[in-house]
Image (cartoon, rainbow, N blue to C red; front, side, top):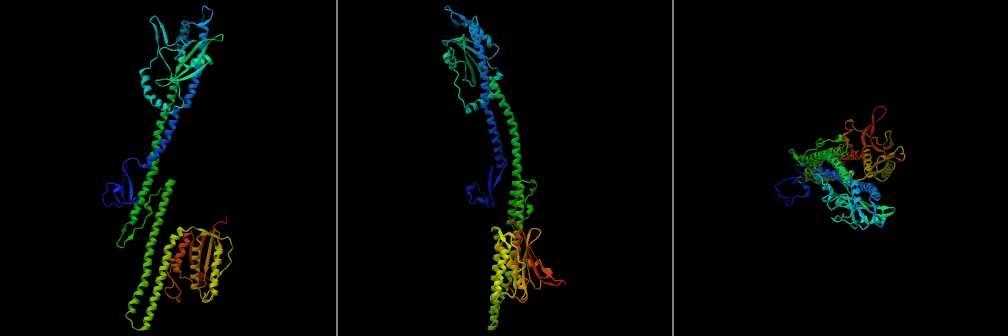
Length: 574
């Protein structure tokens, strides 16, 4: 049994269809009893076991083999009985012909089968019944003997065989003829008798009206190759039935024990799977609710805690993998939320400065009548607008970067070819009018075959940021050197070196912070947003690489420039 409730319950709802909540706003809550997962596992395991046991209970081929064995034994007994009757119950009539004596035949037939449950009948050539082992001779006449089942046998038969008889009738592949039994018996009632007189020894299986099978064998009685009559032996399939029932009972006993073990193991398996999944689902739901709650006066979203997700890593199975993935996802989401909050705070701070300057310039421009001062104020306004435009463009690019790094597929990037093309671009810019005051060189020439996995456009963006940053700090008529080589650890190391004043030792890590700007004194304020190195670090780390800065020193320990190093995992040549 299960009920449905919405995530945010505004009021009672008598039926789910009566509510206007979308399907995604509902959660399934199971009441007391086994979970649907437990029922599914039980159904699959028990169904497979039931099919196997059902096929074993049918035992059709096993029954056919038992019937064939019983018919062979019955036929052998019929041959012996026919031979005995031919030797001891044949007399001569008035015409000196061999005939069967009814009296001798009855005595012999009775004597032959008195120790067995086989019914023996002797038919003459005209199909009249001469002897029947069930008919006793006494002074009062003929009495038919028939064994009645005991009350215990009858009760047990009703209890045990009723289900199996129904199963056999439903699954019976062979249809046997109905046994014809009448008070006055003639040989022509039984096809097996006619066939035996014409063909020789034959067997036949009958279907009894009350259920079960009757096995029969017929053999002609011959005296010096002269057929005098037919002996027909019939026997119910009690031994076959008993053997089959015994096998079925043993199968049912094993089935009962196996079913109990299967149910217990299924419940254990369902709990081993369902319980941790339920705990994970509950934890994820709690994380979702906790993450959307707003806490504090500032309305800052509460950061996610990866410890809120249960740790099932010790299981070393798919649920353990799911637990690890959810914990890592929660950690990444927490870091993402923190980064977004910090980014939003930094953006607000950076935009606030030019807006404050812009507002002050606008307010002052309305009060100043001097054309020269108004011109300067308008220049300030234009600079602040340009700075805002540049900030917004860089902020938009930075906000889209993470999604693009996740969405775009990485490819094989030839580092040597990429750097040669990029350095050639700066060489052309150097030669053009109004070009660069410093030159960019690739020294030493890189060897081919250095490949990394990444997005080429983003790696080009990283190198452009580093080279542009180096050019801005390089004195006139100096050079920025780009080099690349493969390390012993199987990585590709790219270096960008300049001949500027270097970086303050306490700022070697801070320069990669968002909106941090340490620009040359001669550069106009607000020309750069301070996002270039931060974006470069984000791109490199997304490809499992590292980027850092250090100062170049001469032999005397003086700073002679700055060096930026990018290390990316190399790809095999295969």
